[in-house]
Image (cartoon, rainbow, N blue to C red):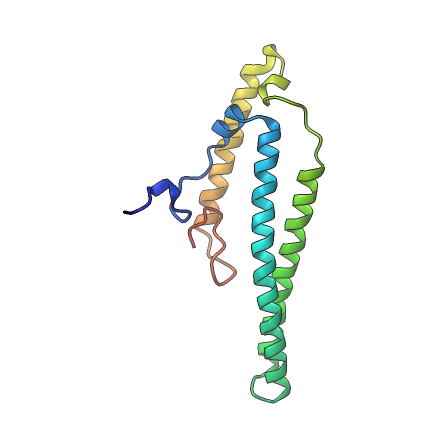
Length: 153
């Protein structure tokens, strides 16, 4: 039997920012962000390691005259990009894990007199997030293998 559409990572609906903020406590949101960053950072580290091995192989083939120097330069640039992204991912994870957050829900931190404006602001933030996802979806990928934020590679 086929899995429901929402269970397929490449076809799942993007996270509803509004729903997540309104239905989850700040500590749960932080934990989910940390979990996602840890998983993505770890996956990225695996790919980076593989790219390093490939780089060593290309270096040897260039030294043996089997490949032009440009192949090594291209592979080194690709590896450096993966390595830089990996560092940024783990920096983001460290930032999330160090964050001090109050207990409870986000709207509980906002006074009742500002709740309407806070909800409007949340709607605006959610729309901006969705706009960013759509814009990214229609930009050509700069890296082979896909890097679409919606998980559809």
